[in-house]
Image 1 (cartoon, rainbow, N blue to C red):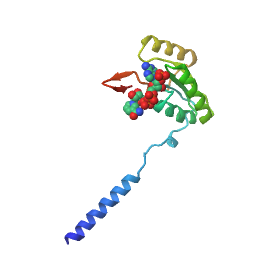
Image 2 (image 1 turned 135 degrees about the vertical axis):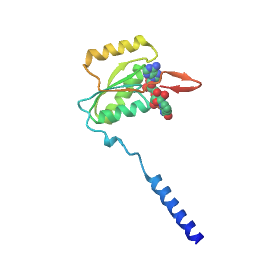
Image 3 (image 1 turned 90 degrees about the horizontal axis):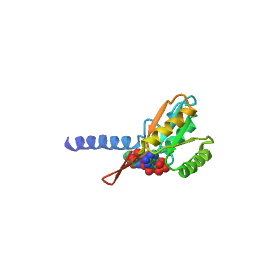
Image 4 (image 1 turned 60 degrees about the vertical axis):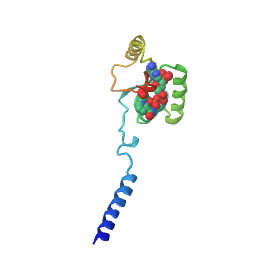
Length: 134
Ligand SMILES: NC(=O)c1ccc[n+]([C@@H]2O[C@H](COP(=O)([O-])OP(=O)(O)OC[C@H]3O[C@@H](n4cnc5c(N)ncnc54)[C@H](OP(=O)(O)O)[C@@H]3O)[C@@H](O)[C@H]2O)c1
């Protein structure tokens, strides 16, 4: 009786472990709907998470504003995005740690757009106890 019970418990555990470890994310980039009527601003868009976000949103047709402090790094990122998506992100110079820069970027954005649909505030703004935070 006991060996049969142990075998049953073991089988259930093996089934759960193999099933759960096979499960991928429930929402993947292919699930993003068409965004061709959306304007999206991503801070810190020239690398890492911001870059990948810009890429997926460009592929879905969004108008993407990529902001960062470094014009040079942003230009390189925009060129790479063009190769990968055949679409062009717009650069907005912005230092989140400087409120004059934030106001300047907002003014520049409003010269070009009348509305903003999505704001990804992803850029890093400093260090705390050796850990970067955004
Ligand atoms: N990667 C992770 O595992 C992880 C984990 C937890 C949280 N996060 C957070 O997720 C966000 C993205 O992380 P990541 O790893 O993709 O970062 P990353 O590759 O280092 O990119 C950071 C981005 O932020 C920009 N940036 C830095 N300082 C800025 C400032 N003062 N104003 C405006 N933009 C600024 C950088 O461009 P410039 O230097 O040209 O400005 C760059 O585009 C960050 O906020 C980070 O704290 C990341």
